Amino acid sequence: MLVVPLELMSTGEQGRVCTLDGAPDFVVRLEEMGLREGARVRMVRSGSPCILAVNDHRFSLRFDDCATVLVELAR
Image (cartoon, rainbow, N blue to C red):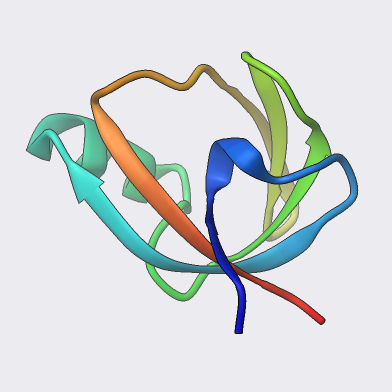
């Protein structure tokens, strides 16, 4: 099992969110968008901002110190 921060995922990599931690308001906002523990994610375009696919939705996310998202990469 390889766990990496979301921002280190490469374009095309997929995985499952295993940890979501940070400022409560920001974490709640991420969860409202579907980015929660257990969610399957795919990095559509890496960078900052990145484009992330969660379920059937894509959104842009800029990384900062408000939250840490760890992803278990799919094999």
